[in-house]
Image (cartoon, rainbow, N blue to C red; front, side, top):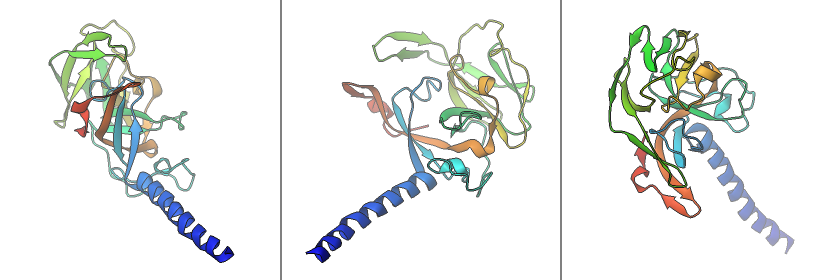
Length: 236
């Protein structure tokens, strides 16, 4: 009887432990799911989006693994991000929190905003007005926000939300940010509602977690659950 119990334990415990190991390996090395809790990346990403992040896009750092163990410094199998990539990262001083923003400045780039317009290396990036974005919150309240298509120097295009007129403040009329080596400058696509490099500083290369690839599911609300069907498997 005892031998039978031991046999049954092995048959149940070992597959369970193997499943946990495979899940951790998958999340650490391949793809990890993330939930979007804020509107800083509207209209690219919405509150309630569930996305998959590519963990091998830029190689691996300690932040690729659960609990960020201090097993090595820097990155292994490193591949450089491109301007325009949407990335998950850990801000300096808040390494226990995941942020998601868009990489705007690469090492040695000079980034500045003037009246809300983006300049990279002293050149104004193109932006064209598109259809307005109708922002609907969980209580079905609507707000109409101006939406633009921004085109940066490498040809990447993406949508940003911003006010048509800006006050002379230090987030829409900034200093020139010169990006240090092995660091990046990030902005949220919802330019007037984003805690990005204008507030939290440059992002070290080591603090990148991965590149956002796809919206798997998107919920307008959870109780009752309401799916945004048009965003299922939506490429970022």
